[in-house]
Length: 325
Image (cartoon, one colour):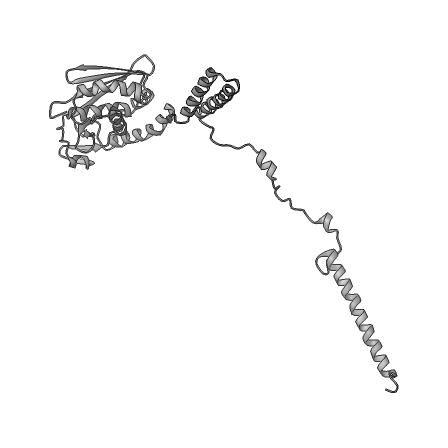
């Protein structure tokens, strides 16, 4: 090298290196262009927007659409709606009484506000449709009846008072069986051998406990007369199980006429079982439990009968003074 002049050999070498670098740059640009258009190297060129299937995403609702959507919820009780109405009218009336200096409007407004506030403290009772109540309990009682008949216990049950609960039902295997004593061992047993029989929980035991609670006194050994005097009010007014009740006592037998009973359809269905009137419907069973607990003696549920009057049931019970059924 002389005077910064590159020799011919070096000039040719540098020119070849520049040509190679330019060729690589052109190939790189072509590769990048192919990747952008096709997505996969070596694939034929195609229009991505036209041939590629599109996937629709679920539509996202805006806050305004969510607020406008109708909400499904529990409606307010009627008593609360009445309370809001009376309270609103009362406040408007009080405001008007101040504007017009009217004493009459003041008393009217105070009265409406009072009744409006009182409506918020009135909570309605929860009621269940009678057909729904029958549907939930009927199958269980029919199953129990079929099981007892299947293992050979076809006799009617006797309600025996016990120490802890009001009564248990003893179902003997043979007629004219001896009635066992209502001890704690009997209450804790299911199958006893002397005499042979089944011991089951009465279907109306929970209802009998509710009736006792509404009466306000203990039924155990309180006397049949005391119970029969308080029973109509509880059944008709407090629990509203029946529309009317008539009670007839004939010696050791007690007959009930239940008018407008919510259990009338239940009794009709239970009469179609294979062991008719074996344990009774919840209403008939509850009455047997009450009589057994109040008298302190075994009670035999004889039968129930449906009259021509719709919703009226006749049920008969015998307070046993003997040691055998």
